[in-house]
Image (tube, rainbow, N blue to C red; front, side, top):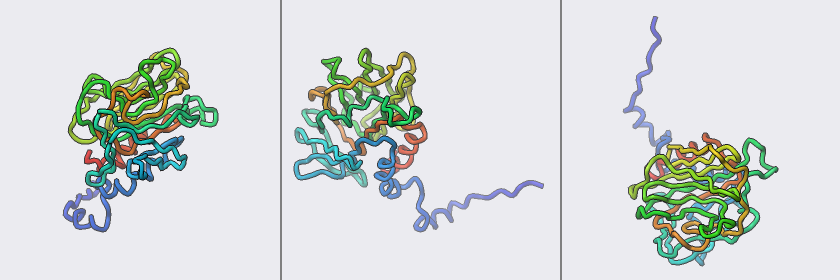
Length: 266
């Protein structure tokens, strides 16, 4: 005797959509987005670009009050359900001066050993594909002692995540190429002495050889849209940016993408 097979009734499914919300549905992703990011372990800052003050400063919704200062003339806007800041690549960035909460080493003893590290990322859209545009950084390219971590565009077609261990930069480039079409989900993760990894949308790339034991504690400011000194400015849009003092699991990073991608039509 064969088991009965349940036939998928697509017509019935569509009729019930007003009552049972689909997972891949922009409104569902929109209402869940901030909650998902606020639940990230080790969250140090979350800047969705939906909340900003009368000076244009971007508010941190993590509860830790790390407001980013407005520089240049970027504009806040929205596309469908997406809040974002639009940086023009000519002197626009958001910045916060160095402070203890941004000096993430990846070896914090109050974090369980299996979770120690750093994770950072955002959703972004590129307006051009020029080499060396910094997206999120605490990094001065001119001074080795002032380099901690960075997420940037390189070689006109990939994104790179780096940490500096005080001696060398440990880099990993995305295995997939970027484009100026649509939004991209980009996340970098550091696991001490083990791995630096980058996600571009759902595709992961890794480097495991010679990874440093910790991240250098530099005095560079945190910036979204440039280096520590305003160089290599980013031309594009940034949404839902975050920074964590923990190495988030592959499952958490995948869940962030899956739970928000419909909002970004990805």
